Image (tube, rainbow, N blue to C red; front, side, top):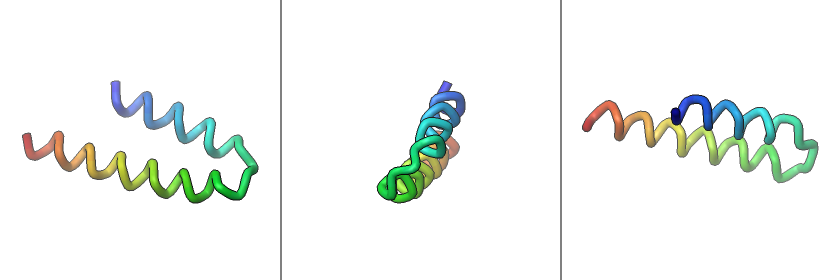
Length: 42
């Protein structure tokens, strides 16, 4: 389930205090939105 996978990734990233984690969170959220948009259109 894509939603569960997304939530798992976000939990891991939010638990990470590395400065790069914020950057990764933004990228994951953007990718997730794009995937959802694609799924809605298909």
